[in-house]
Image 1 (cartoon, rainbow, N blue to C red):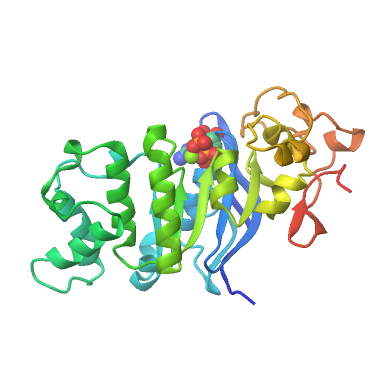
Image 2: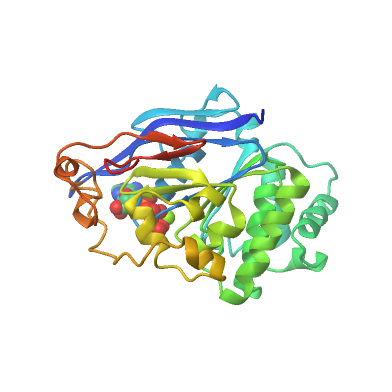
Length: 318
Ligand SMILES: Nc1ncnc2c1ncn2[C@@H]1O[C@H](COP(=O)(O)OP(=O)(O)OP(=O)(O)O)[C@@H](O)[C@H]1O
Ligand SMILES: [Mg+2]
C-alpha cells in the first residue's frame, strides 16, 4: 500500500477581524499519498490558500491536526525543525511578488541552500546550474534579475527555489493562474515531469476544473471552508455527486463526445458564495442548491463514503 505522506484531520482556521470571525477553513479532513497529486478546487474565497498557508506553518491552526509522515506538524513554521521545513515547500500564485527583485536569480536560488546548510561548493554555481537545468532555464539566467525575465520564467525560478532543498512534498497554490495562457501548459508539463523524476507529492490548488483533469490523481472540492466531495480524478468526472460539484462541472467545456455523455446536465449557477463571516446554518451550500430539502437548512451533513475512495457531504447523496 502506498504510504500517506500528509494527513489533515478536522482542520480549522478562523481569523478574528473587525467584520467578525472569518471561518476560512472550517473542519476539513483529507490525506495525500506518496507521489500522488491531490487537486484542491474551489471558487475564490473558499479557503484554499488558507489551507496551503496553514500546512506550510505560516498560520497556526485554530483547531485540528496536520501530520506529515506520521509526525504532528500543527505548529507554526518557526517552531518546525529545519529537517521538516526542507521537506515541505510551496510555489505561490504570483511569482512577481514572491521573488525579490533586488536579488539576482543566483542569489535567489542560493538562499535556501545557505539557510539549510546545503551549499556544497563555495561559489554555489554548480548547484544553481543544476536547479536551472531542472526547470529548463538557460544557465546564464543566474546573472539576471527577475525584472528582466517573463512571468512564466519567473515561475520556473520559483519552482527551482522550491526544489533547492530537495523536498518530498510541494504545495502548488494556483501556480499558473497569474500567467499568460501561452506559458501555462509549459509550466504544467514541467511540474508533471519533475514529479515523475523526483518522486514528488503535490497538493495542487486551483479554481480551474479542466486543469484538474490533466494533473490530479484525486480531487477534493472545497466550498466555504469545507470539503464537499473527494474522488479519484476519473470517478470525479464520470460520477460527480455533490450538487456543487455538478454545478461546477456543468459549466466547463468538454473535449470529446464521450465526455459529453458523462457531463452533468446544465445546472444553472445560482447566487454567489456567501461570506465566511456569515456562514448559512445547516449545509452551507443550501442557499444555492438545486436539490435542497428541508433538512439542508438546519443540519450540516457529514462526509459519507459512497464508493471506494469517493466521499460526499450531502443530504441527497445516494
Ligand atoms: N489573514 C486573513 N485575515 C482575515 N481574513 C482572511 C485572511 N486570509 C484569508 N481571509 C479570508 O478567508 C477567506 C478564504 O480566503 P482564501 O484566500 O483562503 O481563499 P482562496 O480559496 O484561496 O481564494 P482565491 O481563489 O481568491 O485565492 C476569504 O473570505 C478571505 O477574505
Ligand atoms: Mg488563494
